[in-house]
Image (cartoon, rainbow, N blue to C red; front, side, top):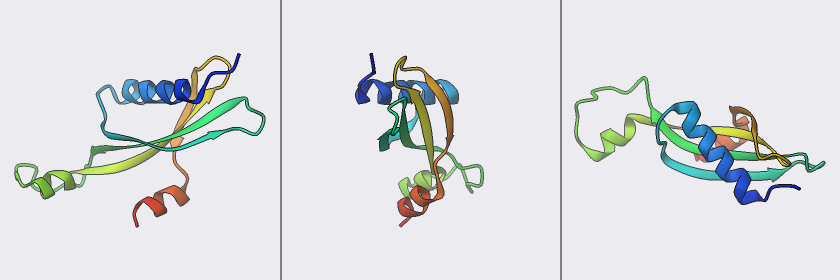
Length: 101
């Protein structure tokens, strides 16, 4: 029996938090796609991670605090039968360029 899209999204969210070993900030669902052969779901999530290039981590303004993070986009392949996450990878460049506009 195939899993529903909500189950695939939940599996991707849980995997992302497991992989990063912490609750993710500003986690957003970006894209959902069922493969043509219906064997797997592709779930794209966007979230904030600390920016390693951030300057002045001691500053307290909200704008500067937000600047210490960067949004990343990850695609999770979720098996449509079992609900298990099979892979996580960077989102393709078209999503990244659209999101930065």
